[in-house]
Image 1 (cartoon, rainbow, N blue to C red):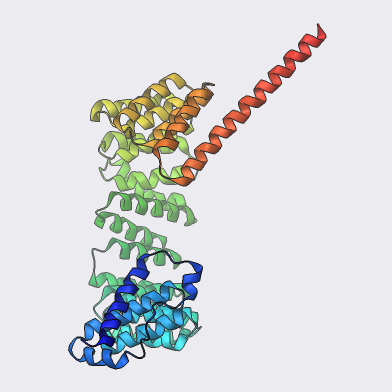
Image 2: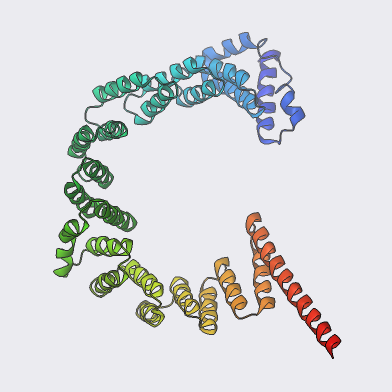
Length: 433
C-alpha cells in the first residue's frame, strides 16, 4: 500500500470519528479532515479497479462528513464521485436527488430521481418521488406522462392503479377515479383500503348507496378491529352527509333488528345517533350490542361514555364492575371504573379504585396524576403535591417534569394566597374588636 493510499484510509478513520463526535461551530467551518483527496484521486482510481466498493465507501464517508458540517455542495461532489464506482447504488441516488433539491439544482435532482425510476420500474415510491419533484416545479404535464409510463410498465400492479385514482380524485375527476379503483380491486379484491378509497370516490360522485356498500365490504374484509371501527365511523359520517340520513340508515337498521352478531352495523348506527345528538337512541343500540356481542369490549367503553354524558353514573359503574367480575382485574378496567366514580363525585371510591389500578401497573405515571386530581378535589393539596413530586422523580421526560413543577407551583401559590387572605381577615377582625 502506498503512503498516499495509507493516508486516504487514515482519513476514512478520521471521518468516521468526526461523524460520531459533537461538532462545534468552529469545527463546521474547518475542513473535514486534513487530507487532500484530489491528490489521492489517482491512488483511489487504481484501488477501484480491484475494490470499487471500498472506494465508493471512502467517498461516501467523506460526503457524510461534509453533510455533518453543513456543506451540501462539497457533500454532493463527494457522493457523485462515489456514484462513479457504484452507478446503480440506490442509497447514493436517493441522497443525491435530495441534496440537489436542497442546493436548488432541480435538474440534477430530476436526473437522479429519474435514474431510480429507470433502475426500479416496479417501485412506486420512486415514481412518487419523481412526480413530487415535477410538481414542485409546476410541471404537471410531466406528472401525468410519468404515471402513464408507470402504468404501461406495471399494468398488473394494483398500487399504480390506486395512485392514478388518487391523482384523478385530486382533479375532481371522480368518475375515472372510481374506474381506476375498480380496476385496482380487480387485481387485489381483498384490499380493504382500496375499498375505502372506492367508497370515498363513489360518495363524492353522488352515489352514497354504492359508497356505503363498498364500506360494508371493506369492513367484512378487514382483519383489524381498529380499522373496522374506523370504517364504521366513515360510514356514519357518510350517512350524515348524504342529505337523506334516515333513508341511508335503513339499510343498517335491518340487520340490527334481526339481532345480527356483526358489530359493524351497531357501530355505524350508534355513531350516527351520537353525531346527531340522539344519545338515548345511541344508548339503546349499544346496549343491544353489549348483550349480543359481549366480546367487543369497545362497545362497553362507548356505552360507559354515553352513560356518563347523560349523568347516569350508576349504570356506568355497574357496567364496568360487571366486566371486571366477568373478566378479572385489570388496570385499564379499574381506571375506567375510577373515572366513573370521579365523574359521579364519589371521591373516596375513585381514590380507592385508582390505587387498585396503580397496584396492577405501578410504573404507569398516569395513575399518579389521577390520584393527585382526586386529592385536589378532596382539598388535600399536600397529598397532591407528593404525587406530582413522585412523578418528577420517576420520569425522564423533561416536558413532564416541567409540567409537574408548574402544577406544584400553582398549588403553593394558591395556598399562599389563601393564607394571606385568612391572615388579613383575622387582622381586620381583631381591629374591629
